[in-house]
Length: 227
Length: 81
Image (tube, rainbow over all chains, first blue to last red; front, side):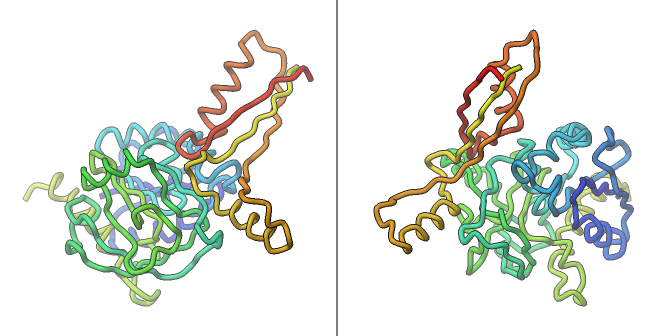
């Protein structure tokens, strides 16, 4: 399976994402610069964390205007897997690939620590390697991770099982309904504030994030490899 | 040439943690009468001569990129520059 890691000016988790795919999963991966206009030949797209365009104006707003986003929208519309982490999640909401928006953390602080997440829906192409209700440890690092959407959207998210992860025990940023990660209605786009790519090996304090990437690969193999 | 003053604020329904922090600080230093503070953004945009309708251009820019209508609202004034 071949992954694209989108790179914007200011992305800073692109290397971690690349490492998780290449070294921990042993799958193919390439960086794709924001000026590119095609994602042809890729089977999955990863939008990494960081501060695209310095988060000027609004986090994710300028990145959404870049060339590669048109290709990403087509890629998502074709049903291919798209994962956005942290700033990547903010970009996906700005692009309307996911509903809602991310606003300033409730306590106004940038938070960087490992938190507990509960796998709310393990029946997605991103979470099939987790148990339902499994509690996992994944690091966060964000100042604007407070998920918001209107009541109608929240009801839809719940009704369609679109909430993939919630914060367990402590909600670090004040996000609505403890939401840490959501998928789109079609189930092929996931956005989450915590960083699974930073939990890809025990030597960095945990490997709970690996199953997320393994889930994507497993689903893809089942669909594309005959034997 | 037109000068456009654009004011972007969070919708009333959205909690403004920055505003709340400032309100708390004001209260602490003796301004107990301040009941609410909302913090927004102010943009000044200069638009050169164009055959297009300036009002329509501003609205389009606001909806497309300058605001996120999920959480923000905007108002603007167009002046001769």
